Image (cartoon, rainbow, N blue to C red; front, side, top):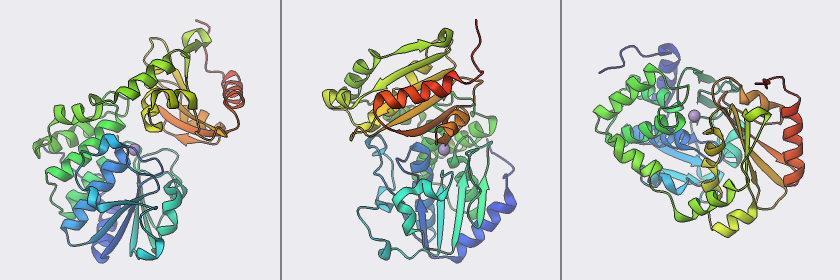
Length: 335
Ligand SMILES: [Mn+2]
């Protein structure tokens, strides 16, 4: 099966032109990188390396351990391991970043004149000399796939695995509303390259740590529903993290549990920061409510079905503020 036509051919050709002209290429992920940012970044870095480029994939934060199985890790580094002076990129590619600031501390390394913006978030600011923001792309990895095809970079099994992980993670295992025919066509081509879907799923979803389950056990005690069962909320406190020995990244999947309740449209997960000065809010919705707008009201952003915000203050203050905003929305029905 082939994906046939390449979308955004003109923009992608401009990007290929810039990448061809430059030897030193810096690729930036967003803070707290997810499977899409990591998979897209590693795939692009490996492909550029295979074309003789000096590609560095850089992020503010380390990759979560669940992605340790991915190839190409030798091309990735974090800001704590390299100085800005050690990097002299001719071009910088931002993957999966709504704006330059999303790169966090890695932004100060982007000293090239040219920035390329590859993303699929509705809240993308359109930054960069060349910007390709495709809201129909299930993942940024889908855009990297077409870029590599156009560039004539061979998509080997290593690159295919990274792109496949980008697709799987951003679609929640091909379950969310962003799962499109095109996304499946790309996935099929990657499987043709040798990706083993069940092995990848095993690595991503069936290899949890005991401590992450203990964290979930504690968090489930706080599960509550509101608004006639349309809103559900769960808490992850610092104490729960300490008791369970789980990591902050283990808390990322907790929001899926309130979202999985029948009838729930909006799910919230409140995660207390380790210094207890802020709360990280994750928002998810099932099919109707655009949670990126709710996150926007709280100073955050994201996708219609998955968004987030950081709220300063104690746990109680942050929760009160969020519920105050949610109470003011006319999205809840009586039955
Ligand atoms: Mn993404």
